[in-house]
Structure formats: structure tokens, C-alpha cells
Length: 269
Ligand code: BT5
Image 1 (cartoon, protein in one colour):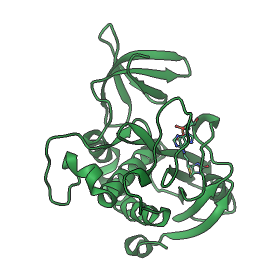
Image 2 (cartoon, protein in one colour):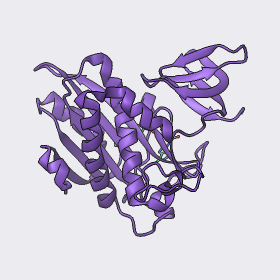
Image 3 (tube, helix red, strand yellow):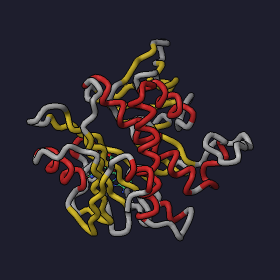
Image 4 (spheres, helix red, strand yellow):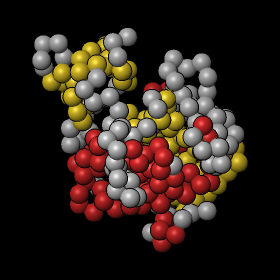
């Protein structure tokens, strides 16, 4: 079910046990003329998709959720929505699993901080890490509507009870931190938090305000990174994320390079 704030804001949810891909369902809805503000949520996907044609594993009990909206914002602003989703989910987790987040004091209910980094962190562009392992990924897709406007599909996959093994990087599930957690609880927290952050983004503060919050909990700032881009690999120091959401890397010669899309690996390997 939808939490009160999301329902009051006019969102709907359609829930499934098992589907191919919730992003595919959301695109089909946009094609069929649905005006948006609808979530497709499932406990399992058999054809979950990642970025650039990669697969996303969604075993039963995890959360696959896709929101379809038709924003009024200009097309150039729309890529910012991936960051809205990242920040919204990060804030939702901070409420759900305070032990993981309070260390940073960022969203701390009691405002405290012991000066340590949060165990949950955002990894550019669209991953969530817990203790350095991937627990969630976000896939943003766009579909031009025949009726006008652009439908944006924001898909988020969360490892609630299981994470795949044998990946080239560590993955983990929320149940490792709280065995009682379930997908419905995670979805409700996400849907509630989405409303809050979308209102901030849409209400005039835009991507810069969202990025400001994103930066506060970014993984790997100051670290050596290798960024895999269509044109090759760029190595350097991860300096920051600019207000538009570009990854800023300083290369060996001291040049600051702004990156729009790519896969980031921490460390020198
Ligand atoms: C992502 O892609 O991280 C975006 C994933 C988005 C999934 C959601 S679920 C709801 C909606 N419906 C869909 O069909 N998709 C969205 P990317 O950064 O490309 O990461 C994909 C890569 O992560 C794969 O190539 C694997 O190496 C790895 N991977 C696959 N499943 C994983 C999982 N459950 N946990 C962690 N890593 C995973």
C-alpha cells in the first residue's frame, strides 16, 4: 500500500508478485497514455534490467519498483531525477535503518554525529552502498508520449533479502543489517521519501539542492577512481559532483574533467 503522504499527493501503486520488469510495465503504461504518478512494484523480476543493456537480478523477496511520471520540467532538467531518487532512497534508508545512517548525523533523527562516515553511501551516478557493497541500483528511462510531454520511468531495485554472488564487486542485502526488514516496508519508506524530495526538486530548488544533499553522503570523494566511459577509461581523483550532477575528476595533469555518464571503480585497479 501507499503511505499517506504519497496517496494524498495523488500517487497510485500497482503491486505484483512476479513480473518481467517493472520498468517495462511502466513504459507500457506510458505508451498506453497513462498520465503518470503511478508506481509498479514487485517482489520478483524475471527480466530485470540494469543500465546499458545489463541485467539486474531480482530474486523473490527483493524490491523492484518503478515510478512513471510526466514532469512539467524542461527536458534538460530531467536527468536530475535520478539524483532525486538516489537522495530519496538514501533518506528512506536512514529512517528505516538508523544504525546504518546515524553515524553521519545527516538525517539523524536526534541530530547527533559521532564524526564517522555513514555506512550507507551514494555511489555516482545511481547506486546505494552499505559498507561498500551495492544494495540498490537506479535505472532512469524516458519515453516521449504521443499525447505530449516526456514520461520518465525511475526504476529502483533493492536487495532486501538476497544479493547475487560472484559479481566483480561486492553486493549485499538489507537483511544483513536488519533480518526483519521486508520489501513492503522498504517500498513505503521510499514512496514517502520520494514525495518529499520530488517536491523540493519540482518546487523551484531543482537539481542543485538535491545534489547538495547527495554530496553530503557521496562515497569515495577524494579517492582514486577509474571511470569507464564509451570512449575508454579515465583515471584520476574524484573531486566532487557539480550542481548539475556531473562527476568531476582531476586527472594526472591537473585537468578537471566533468563526466556525464560512466561506470566508476574506486581504487587503481
Ligand atoms: C543498475 O544498473 O544498478 C540499475 C538497476 C535497476 C533495477 C531496477 S529494478 C526495478 C526496475 N525494473 C527494471 O527492470 N530495472 C529497474 P547497473 O549499474 O547497470 O548495474 C547492473 C550490474 O549490477 C549488473 O551487470 C551486475 O553486475 C550487477 N547486479 C545485477 N543484479 C544485482 C543486484 N541485485 N545487486 C547488486 N548488483 C547487481
